[in-house]
Image (cartoon, rainbow, N blue to C red):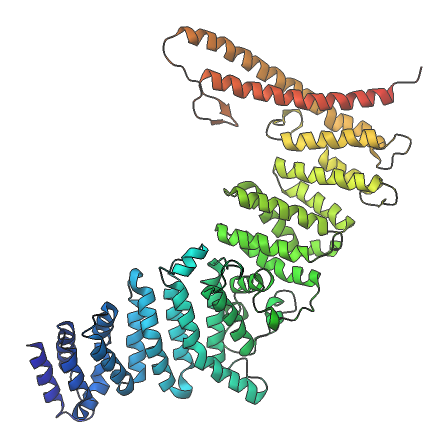
Length: 592
């Protein structure tokens, strides 16, 4: 029935000249042709389409059969495959390339999640054939095709393990490999233009579309991928894809060092309709930097003449971007890129001027968030390691300024405690022979000590919440009073001591006595309540409130344990504080 309908509409349309087919003709041709294909009559459809008398009909209406044809090809039914492939080849040869392009891209866009990889790999060669038929006017069409294809490929799950990349269940690796073959003739065309003209116009439309393809590929999927080392996975399609993307960039006239340093060097006006931020997205450049300096991709086309400090400066904006994300894969890339950039820098060499740059302030802030808020223990540990590495690279003046800035802005007792520990290390180093400097001794040190030896809210400061900071501050003070003799006073601590006593030690003693008395009273009350409740047959629970927030209900035993832990913490603070008071008292006591 459908075959008869198709024959009838074709026979009737043979008499129509040029392109005077009605909408009804198009509908009948599509409906009958689709039904024939679905019923397995592909051989008969092929014979109708290749008939020379029907060439004009096929040229105008044949592309409408792409949808049903693609669906049958995806099913891979053996008896229909040869005829369906022949039909597709004939349509690609006869139909309008613009209409074919629209039809093929519609099939790519409409692909179900489970069939994206198969659809993309099936249609890449037909799409390439169609685009090449467009001749010199293909640039915008190439761009549209690449954008559509990458948008679909970006939906595919990224393999995480070596085994997942090898198995390639969802087809991302296969798609990436096929995409490289797809763009090859277009890259070659631009390369020829570069070769003939020595350089190609930055505004060449095809070059711009290939640049957009590379930038989009760097953003997705490559930014999401953790590439495997060749020792782990000898043949890695994703690593090959990343390598080829960088090679393409270089081939179309993009200098990798210039791309890397765009944010540092003075911005130049980019000719053409694309604004610079659109043409060179920061996210894509962050991935490029990671590929170069962490994965060591395309090192043979990247000159190793840039100074380590300049490379670090270039990478800081990309590190800032990666560390500001919440995705753990991005955080890890940011941490490793920062680490690799720092390792190449000599210790104690980064000048203080760098701290005037926005990124040298914002990156440590983001790093603190990773160290304190990231749920992944491995990333928190890595963050702390990189944080210390960054401190080690600053020169003495830069360390001083960095410590002051972090004490003012971190607002986290653990981080502040870590900074104070570093300050102690710098003072200890400076007190050793031949290591004296103007920043961690004498007049410059005192303003820093005032930031260290202070209580945010005086005697009412929450000592438990600020424990890390308080303990490190007391340890620093105790160390200085013992290490720096009063008659030498290299640090200036003895000159400042009376202020420290009034502004820090006495308020701390007051706060400690109040806190300890309060918790000891609570502990005593809890123990008495436990005795009473133990006589009651019902299991009892109690509520503890911290900072006006109720914690989950606790048994009396749990409450006693929490209170005992707090009292033990106060005893720990008091032991160091008492030792400091004894040292001061001994120094102030007149000789008999």
